[in-house]
Length: 197
Image (tube, rainbow, N blue to C red; front, side, top):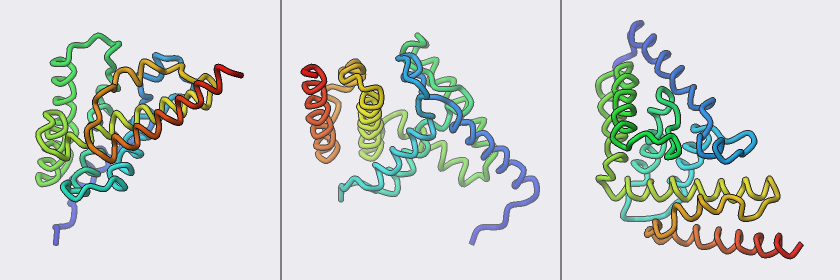
């Protein structure tokens, strides 16, 4: 059984949880750049990704690890914000900032949790496991699902086509590829219907 958190440890944990709370208020930048009204927060994106990891079936993957990866993959954004390609920040610089943020964040946790969260983030960043690769596909699947929902909300079928184009050919996990195929069929039907209206 784990030792109870000391007074200082409780203060650090509260500070960590307050930083994580920022994710509720950090908008997903890509949507803001595309003039989506009331874009989802980073935490909203991560929450649905975690659910996607929970309900996706694959006996070759550690489902618990996939859920954890989904919950941690954008954690650094509570400090650095959601850096999008349109920000023109080189990948190396984005990674450096996020790594620094992860070190800052995890310093607030007991050593075992510090190591676990940092290693999960690093695993996702380096795509060093089958679980990380699957969660990366869930990340992109969640993004195009959200794009489809924004198009429906705005009643502008096809408006966010560039989001779909950016993920073309990226889905190799059978169940995720099937989800994407179904989503695209539904979306294409809406686009056809919308153009005939």
